[in-house]
Length: 483
View 1: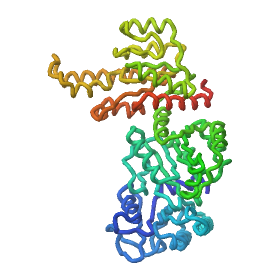
View 2: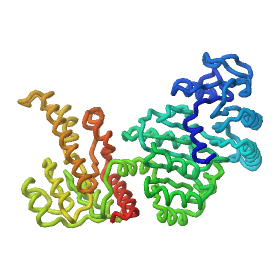
View 3: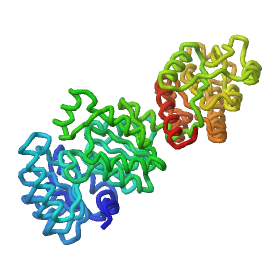
View 4: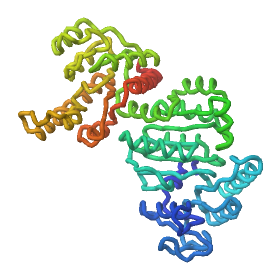
């Protein structure tokens, strides 16, 4: 069977079993079984040698006793019982397995030998498996979750592979906070059988995956990884956080998943050749994802900065320069057009400092300037996104001649109209417009913020983060030949 299609049994099984299922909350065998029976419509069988029922479901003392074919099994038993459990899976004809158990290659030589034994058993039965020493996987499109404590998740186009279960949970939580949707997630563990490269190949062909994220400590098949990435990145962006770049980090990688980290300089050069977007910080995985999913591909490196205050513009311009982008001079025609809609206090240059004026009308002249390939907005100048939050606590709200609730409604309606128009114009001109603005809890609860999230346009909290993310978008667009 085709290796990639075989993984369908892993991400969308019709039947599943949990070996080591338990009635004790907090144990992997209980928490995972509970997840499987409360999500999706697949048939799930608990396996426990001493219990007749698990969470109210009839239990079987062996997977061999289950009166059904099993596509997928989760093994949660202690490592010394794992070989026998894997042998039973072979005899039953199980196609894919998730091995939660730890105590293998990550602990040294004895663990390495034990892990090899498990891999050899699985190979003999043509079983593909995740792990060992992992924390589960997710497929939102198939209502499948074997990852206890996984955060709230939206269905979406991002697939994430993490060689750290805890880090994977953090990234998933941050994706949710940013309004981004997840397709699939894998905590890959020690990768004794299925490697990062296998998941990359699968996601590359998966119709529900549009963007691939990876937290990587080391590669098992470096050459294959680069060959796959070069092919996939033409159609789907690949964003990688590769760690273990220092001596201390490399040692930590080996003790964590037994991964060999390799030369960071070689990785950097190879990533660029394969079109991989490399990031250095966890938050960059989320920031770059926002840009890739919410923005058109820019045709160049020239960025207009539109800001409500000088300091924000300086921060944006500094980071754009550090990231290899350009803050160009605006055309005289653009300056004239901006002067017609702004007060005499504006900066008359790039960054465009409006000195506090409402500057939504400034966006069209900037989009139409041939010297500009993208716009970075620092502060709530594109629409009064922060206005309602500011005035809702203002001491003078009782002085408004219009009813306060009516005023807030008018502000939000105007903002929503402006947002739709800006989004249309950005894609029409092929020029990204990235936002950075203060978003209080009140703003986040509003309709405007929710709509921004639905468009993958969630504002960055600071202009330097917006600039860094935009630079990665430009880098990827250049790789695709758009500039």
